[in-house]
Image 1 (spheres, rainbow, N blue to C red):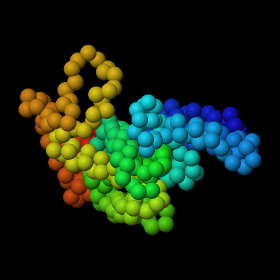
Image 2: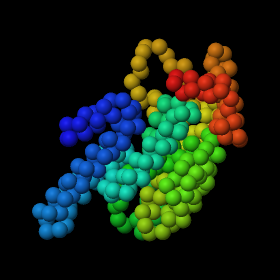
Image 3: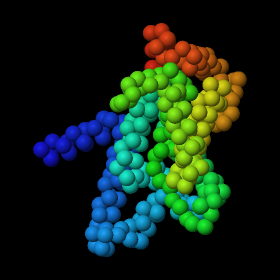
Image 4: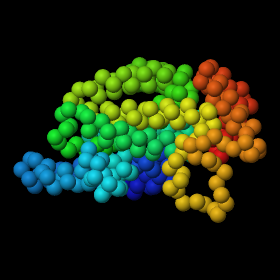
Length: 289
């Protein structure tokens, strides 16, 4: 039985793609942290103790700026850290849904950039908010989890296709624009309360980034700045101009970009169901690029 389960897991990791691998990393980190927590709690008279929290804080964002400078890896590792079961469950479910929607609509490359950039922008908003929240002024707080990144994907999807329906367990079919609005209102309300305030500010930052990414993409401005830090696959100069409109000299790319923008506008106004078969085929080809 266990051999069969392990084979299924290995197969899914190989064939499931990038998002399944992200989910797998989050699950492994969750299990490791909770095994450590159980060990430290059992061996320390029912209290996890300082040693355990030193471990979790070493991979989480701190409200102290210099800690994040000296421990530069936390800008990435905090995304994959979840301690509570429902924190992990909801984030992974939403990651699977919204990453798939964004990927289907504008492609794998953009969906990855939105995920990581929304997480980083959410982290930045958390750090700024921690300097002004009254109950954070004299203590150090830590933030972790993929919520800001997932919010970025949700608001990107809702901006591209606000009438896109997603089926929720209790409520049935819900359009993305209403789901995004509910999440936005809840984060605004709870950000001003002494209950994970910094986390809610991070959620708002991620949501803002996802929304702006699509708004600027429609204007021909690509906010894929993470690509600047990636290793180039060839010696040829990249044809993408970061944070700038494409040069008029790229005539061969302009018709495709214009058509993509028109299709995205049509999805925004009428929903994805309004696309013709030919438009769906074009969008599918661009997604695979």
